[in-house]
Length: 372
Image (cartoon, rainbow, N blue to C red; front, side, top):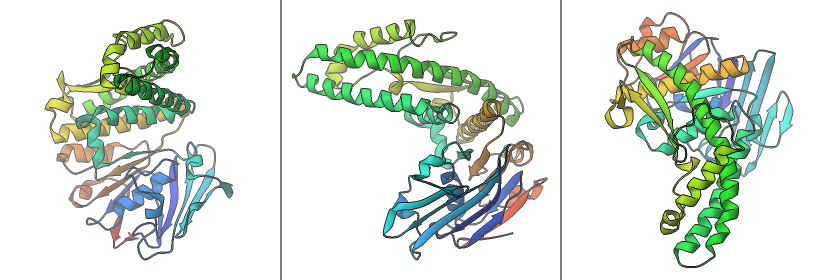
């Protein structure tokens, strides 16, 4: 999958940006607050996902603008396609979103048409942050491969909300404990399914991250990822998410019900699971340096792209925001000169590393405008 051209105007500080992109490597250079990340964000929104910066729809539009428009043409393995969306002040909810000229009701309806993977400085939280960040990464990755996964997650979260509401009532001495049974059985069925998909995905993710991290570190460090379930002791080779795994999940919920009532929420389940990352046997979260944490997060993102290629037959576009900072020169050059099997768009402030770039296009951003 390759972006041919991107046009942005009025999106935050971006003004009349029109770029033809290199099919391989694209470097967007400029000082801070010039619009580099805004451009990455505008491209990401074309995937149908919410802003990775948490930007609200009303904040898409620049302070001095009345509207924001983003247009993009891209080529997948079948044809060239076009995405456009526009939003006006005073009519934020009435965004105009089109795919190949066909109007869509929501920006999220673009999901699955244009695929990309984004890395941002906040992705350090993949290894250093809370388990929420790692679960979200795994869930988004699976959803890009299996469309029905989002429905399963939403179902689980709805059931969990109801169970937690009842637990809160029980913790205050009210309600009927037997009422938990209906929520337990539903949570166990959906939770077992999610557990299997996450575990299976993590096995594949570990394979690719291990290979990538080995190359990034010249074989000096070994990275291993493990899915850590709060319900199951071992998921290896187990796929019966409609039989034994459901029974085990249900038994775990029932065995912890006293703790749950005291806490007022569900203390075990896929909403509490984690993915552990270890370098040479040591936890990255507890002992990894900033450079190691960034390299691990980058390896996980690149591995996600390779999994998408294996599952869907083509690479997504790789968006790397400020990826070169805090990496040593060897790791910087690995990114610039060895990721040659997909289109990459990188933002950076320091132009020094790109002097040794072997191929690609360099774009300069200044005051929201772009130039070669």
